[in-house]
Length: 135
Length: 33
Image 1 (cartoon, helix red, strand yellow):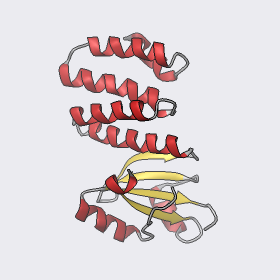
Image 2 (cartoon, rainbow over the protein chains, first blue to last red):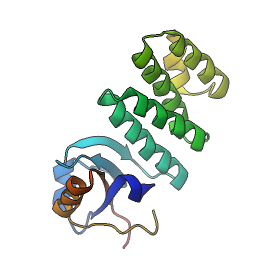
Image 3 (cartoon, helix red, strand yellow):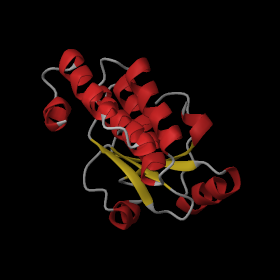
């Protein structure tokens, strides 16, 4: 997954402390998704087990598509996060944003309502379920 | 993230990103190497 979507760059605090300052990395581990101009697109801070980390990276790809208004692509990525990593911390957040992407694409508010019901059923304790509770 | 061939130079990573159309995954680490 990583090689398919990313150029992996390792910056060690002892070798390149100036790069920590340049990119505002104040804790380790921190992962940043950067565009080709070096602009930060997504940030992950703190250790995560492998499955959670991959889920977060996929969530990052989804959010980048979403922010660029590529809603069909974003919706697919959000859906894949939930399907592939249902136990990951990113899953309820992905479900929330999948609903938003579907709404943005269709302007059909029933996507939001369905998302809220789905979150309540699958992730009753999640903050994302509470965020969707107004739908 | 075992088995990954990490680039160690920021400019080189950005150059590869430009060429490939990929994003850079920058891992800021303090772990023993």
